Image (cartoon, rainbow, N blue to C red; front, side, top):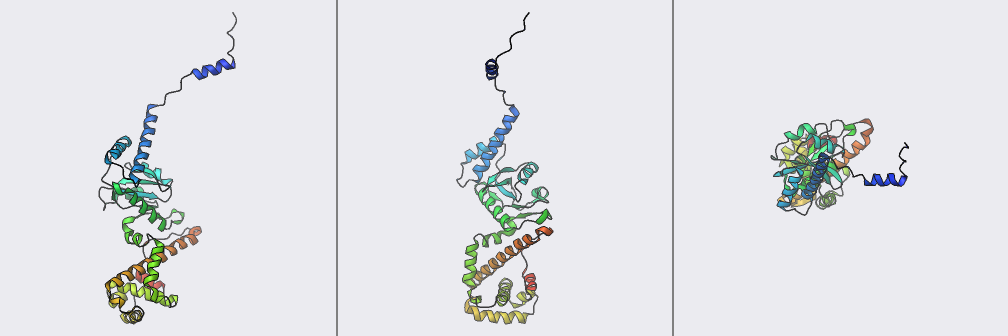
Length: 299
């Protein structure tokens, strides 16, 4: 009995085409749909065009992410950590905002950070303020802004999360740096003809006086004798005239001095981190107190 003839190439190809495509695994298909739904929900929550409540509810149901009353944004400094955090934080919603992977987490109590402390320990990330769902994009924007202002820790040593809640005044004053420069130039113009050392000494004294409310308080903050403060204040009165007695002028001057100090501080810290990266030295974003600034400047 002769063996059956070998199939030709055309017959083999036709047989392969006739074979049905394998059906996707139900679990895999469901996971893909859930992932897409979560991405769509993240996009809807962070879009400036507010989605309707019914649309958000449908997306949340498909994503398996119950809509909270308020959320916080988390912006990791290293984008690769986003998925790691999403795994650790069971209730986190991951997505991309302004080209960066970020997270949203429910925040039922704006004053409570405990649920985030352990997952964020040893990680460099910025955490936004708690906001209602309609303001989700705001929390993300300010978290990313704080991340940009905060110098990265060299070598990952002492990495920690920074919270927008702790830097509200800094972010407010530095939300537009050209405008902050214009504010300082406008109100600190009387100091322009002094030497850098004289100007810095009087700026530090004036800010301490404005913050403390008087010469004794300013002297204590600067670790100098009250008479030294009174002498410098007489110099400042000659430069600024009666404006120092005007509440609005004092308010504007304090904002100008604070913004200038903050901008200088951010520049120093970024420069310090850049110089010391090879030696693995960390930098701190905690604002310097006036007394320390005074001692550094030899006052």
